[in-house]
Image (cartoon, rainbow, N blue to C red; front, top):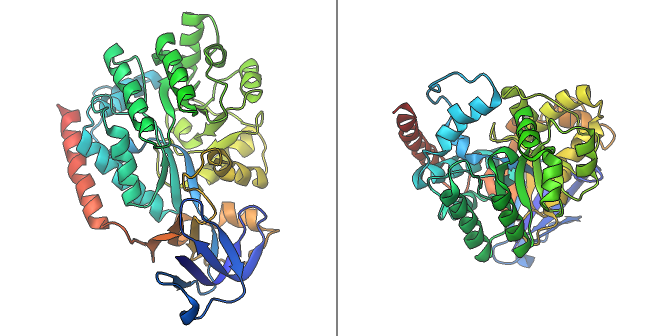
Amino acid sequence: MTLYLQNAQYIDSQTLQVSSTHLAVEVGATGGVKLIDVIPPTDERKDGDRVIDCKGRFVTRSFACGHHHIYSALCRGMPAPPQIPTNFPEVLEYVWWRVDARLDKDMVEASALAAALQMARRGVTFCIDHHASPMHVEGSLETVASAFEKCGIGHLMCHESSDRNGAELAEKSLAEHDSYLASGRPGLIGLHASFTVGDDLFEKSVNLAKKYNTGLHVHVAEDIADEVHCEKTYNKRVAERLRDLGGLESSKTILGHCVHCNDRERKIIADSPVWVVSNVESNQNNNVGLTDYDWLDNIMLGTDGMHNDMLRSAKAHHLVCSTTGGIGYDEVYRRFRNVHTYLGQFEGVGDDLNNLVILDYDTPTEVSDENFYGHFLFGLEALHVNTVIAQGRVIIEERKSTLVDEEEVLSHAQEQGKRLWAKLSE
């Protein structure tokens, strides 16, 4: 089966060259895209082949999220916490740890479906998620993965292991990782952060990652409290602790945030093969501080559960890091697209070139390879996403899902959101 895109203005995601062309899009997890001069006539096409007339619209590679928390999807408008947080540890204690401790299977599924649908409608076809539901551990990763697939979203999952809820739940989280990865699913080994993870859990997580030839996904120095705890407890900084425990050895490992790393830690991380993911909007929202990321090459962008829009994340990263680091438009775009380089380490996960967006971009100025960065940062918005193709399959057409009943998904999410809010109010 082949999907043909007729009359497209194709923007190559690497060279940025704009071509007036037709496209042949292969279906499958490892499919590609070919620029062709002529669409085959009807009698030469195979059963299942389809032609979409792009009518001169722009077409380019779709987007991917390097760090998400989809379990936050039901939290918009939720009840206020019992106490107003005055620092980041209190934000966790009074807000997020109260939320994740109340999630059950139905809430997790509703969160995943709602987040996946909203990502798809914003042109995001792949998500690296960091999931937390300490009271619903067993089977939770499969619940999220299946919900993502119903909406057509590719995924790389992990469960947030932590000692904050006791040794028994920490072991359950490790077992969930083991079971999920043993089933053949791609994934990472999730850890919360240094200040809630003891040496034993960390070492077991490193060993489990090695067993499945994968990496860790852990929050690092998001707030200064993480560094203060590490120095007081272990007499070293967080990056030093991760290095000493074997946590910086895999190029598949993701470190979230790294806001408060000092120069020594930056060198340790930059000299390792790991990746760092920036989430500047979340950092601002939680008032933990801002930083530059000019000290490493392996940097990509996420949302940290704030929203599902990677174009928005790129614009926010530009506004912050043009001040903290003085980066140019080209570097913002490189960081935005780096998630594809990272995902290239995982064979067959479904983030190849046959993931595309058709953009109804009503620009008053021309688009070329020379000025694309300006359009990327100051023109393109999620509202321009008209049609989305994931692994060669149309998952959003004319801004509507082709796979799920949107009203049903959102109605279910609202129902489960009310259940969650009621638990938060008890």
